Amino acid sequence: MTEARVDSDPGSDNTLLVTFAGDWMLGTGLPGAKSVLRQLQKQVTPDTVSFDTERLGEWDTGLIIALLAIHREAAKKDIKIDEAGLPEGARRLLGLAFAVPEREGDRRHAKETGFLERVGDSALDFTTGARDLLRFVGELVLSLGRFMHGTATYLRSDLLFYIQEAGAQAFAIVSVISFLIGMIFAFVGVMQLNMFGAGIYTADLVAVAMIREMAPIMTAIIMAGRTGAAYAAQIGTMKVNEEIDALETLGMQPVDFLVTPRVIALVLMMPLLTMYASLMGILGGLAVGIVMLDISLIQYIAQTVNAVDLSSLFGGLFKSIVYGSLVALAGCQQGMACGKSALAVGQSTTRAVVMGIVLIVVSASVLTVIYINIGI
Amino acid sequence: MSDSTPQIVAQNLTLAYGDFVVQRNLNFDIGRGDIFIIMGGSGCGKSTLLKCMIGLKSPALGDVYYNGIPFWSSGPGQQDAMKRGFGTTFQAGALWSSMTLAENIGLALRQYTELSDADIRDVVAYKLMLVGLAGFEDYYPSEISGGMMKRAGLARAMALDPEILFFDEPSAGLDPISAKLLDDLILELRDSLGTTVVIVTHELASILNIGNNSVFLDPVTKTQLATGDPKDLRDNHENLVVRNFLQRGTAEMMT
Image (spheres, chains in turn brown, blue):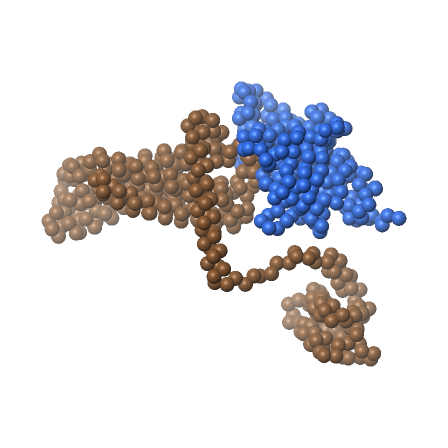
């Protein structure tokens, strides 16, 4: 393989003769057309550019892009191009490249955006996002109304499937996480309370913490990662595949068909899972308690039963219903707002989980303040 | 073929995404029983026009009239009622992937008719037979080929015996024999049921074989260049772009 070279000599009667030599293959370190372009950009420009390719070896796109650069520069300066000296194949490829002219206004230019413009854009994005969310909540409320009246279109088998997905199939992960959370609380309790000789109150700590706060929050976060993400991905993929368009063209409400059954499934299952999570957490605490404290199983259980009242239980269950509906709302809203590409499905899944967790924690804070004020 | 009052009238339609205009000033009539072709080069807005006609994308200006009733100026309830007279097949089938073919086709029947489950099963079996998929009731869309999905999509679109059938690129990706069979099926549906058919396509063979009315969209001027019978446009239209398209780029300047 010989090295690619390009020379340009001002020839007779104001012609620039460009000589290509060697192998002009992509990926072999090409000299490019820069030296020729410099000639063309001089004050005194030639009338015509002609080519000599006698000593040109093998060539591919590497040669064509150099020729295109010369073409473009020559067109700007009204310099004629004499293609006679080029190989037959290169002439034809150039012809093809210019066969369909660029349409006016098709090319996109990277836009410089200033700091203020970006701030403004994100503020506008925020308001449209908030408006979309509100509209979605409104549609969901209307759809729930239709569901209660029995006029909504959905498949009962779908509803049962979602209930199974959000309920029975979440058992294993909820068991493991709550059991461990109960154990962690018990460890902390034993360490701290034993210093005051009050180790027995570990049972109170675990039971109250699990039932009032931790079981609802942990279950909701698990469901945000499991079910909320799944909702966003399922609905988002349906959007990409035009399946939602297909529903709409039949005059059906996608919200009735896709969103309401999912929301109902999660809202029904959340309190049950939360109750179960509380139980598992208390068992975890019990395991740690009877090993590390000098008390019997009966004592621990009696202490737990004394610590918990019914209002704590219902307070926790109410929280779980709120969290469940927020997780389902975030998942379905992000799914319905999904763009039409594989990337968009990933983004809306991520956003569903983030939005779900943020909503859970914010509403947990608000609810806790309210509970304290009304004395639950 | 078509009687005097057109069934579908597009009036001054302008289609845009944000401030990017796709097509402007579209005006055409579609008669009852017409096979109407929406054609034009790639990226000229054929699918966008179809989306506007089936109620998925609102036009920037203008309206589509069905039997004299403007679609986009009607309320949501009226729109849903009008949509029930449409059947649509999408480019990739767009079957609901969590349902079997029988459930896909049966959903609209279950929703909008009083048929019993056994009757629905019979209707579904018959629609699948029509598109050459007899016996595939209990397959999921992911278990059948792309061409079969398209045909299943057609069976779903025909479930309610719609007055108007819309097709988005029906023969793209089909082998020549299947494409011919699909064309025959479309003609058969029109002749036996009187269905009006609107097709987005750039398959020349289909355009000339089955189309008897059409609109030609141009991506450069962003408006329609011609409307009428495609065979007539091929031979006699004054615009070279239109004739070139319909003659696969071999049209001569008219003398």
